[in-house]
Length: 68
Length: 463
Image 1 (cartoon, chains in turn cyan, blue):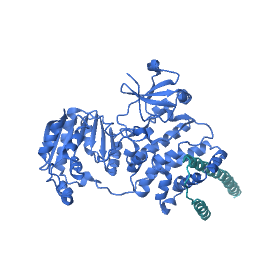
Image 2: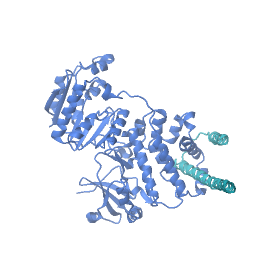
Image 3: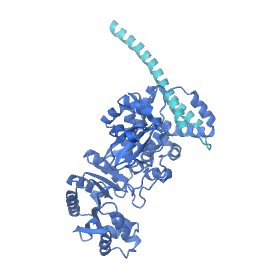
Image 4: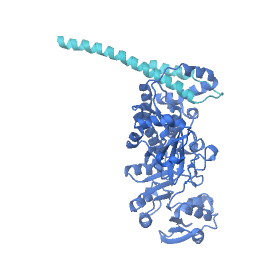
């Protein structure tokens, strides 16, 4: 949780800029979608390995139950 | 009969909307043929209509064979909307309903490999209290990896105005009317405080996005480079963005700030007896005239519209300046499934002709198509509250419909006394004699019913 908060503030502070020139605001949305897409992909990647870890422990517990 | 081009329909080269013989006709141009063929062949239109997402639409190309050309390929007829309204006339819950309708429609479509190519809030209209999508040419084929083209527009036209009210308690309407594209993410970001921004939803959809937009303005080449190198967006990510926004918007509520007319029906100075008498007169009027479309000016929470609908009026549109009263009326219309659409309306500054060439969004005056009107406890707010000459108030009200009911409130009335207590009586022409004279200048008095010592209800018919 603390790590998440630190990451949140790093991104937050690194983005403190002012802007003057002109570009279609839609470009920001596309970059944001790319970031969100990457986060979603990252999360599903984590979920994949988390499930593997969970299954590993489940198997161990099941084995233990059987041996008992 | 000629096809008359709708001046608000020009942005999409794929097609244009026309009025023809009191019908709404959309012409699909050569540029839009591929788009239309796709949704037509996949039965997307009929399925979307059946699910109440899309306005009923039928292909009437055969009827327009003579008008067909190399550029005008298909002719579609849409069900006509009784009263066109705009997002700056909607209350919080109406914009929220429209936003959820848009997202639910997108979620429905994406499973059929179809997307909405834009997120214009003006593509949603209300039939009574139900939102409906009206622009069939906004539907197009989804291709794997596609980004959500209307994402930024959705935030500006739906999410940001809702957040303005939800986080800051500021109604979005006047701001929205000033900028027809909604509320810019960068502007909203400036208003939100640190506490607001601690929400992850706000961080991604407002703070991060506005910072990216600002950065892109400083360095557009770098931004374009990033966009070129971007990876494709998976369908799951596309969908999860829609679901995330949907879940968030479903939970949004207005920041409660009591308005002047909150609980008007329960705390006003009227006696219950007077109210019952007015209800009876509204019912009698509605029973006698059976209006197809009634305007209720100063509708408050909709009490008299509801009574009118029960007595024979087919549909009613309510207008009121109090945004909380509109929300209350809208919720009641949903709950009781009434043919009633309440809208935000400031009679001292009604919706004017706005947008491109001052012709894109129509004014209140241009949209008047009512066959009856009621204005109860209303005229004194214009004449005494806002100093509009009584003669002009009566004329303006009588121009809304050929017949109706107008309540006259005398200077001796308790409410009026309060209104004038600071201002003083600077209205020498405000009296019942003149009121009647002005009605007769524009039409006839059909009935005159005494509500109390200080209030009289007039039934009029225009010349």
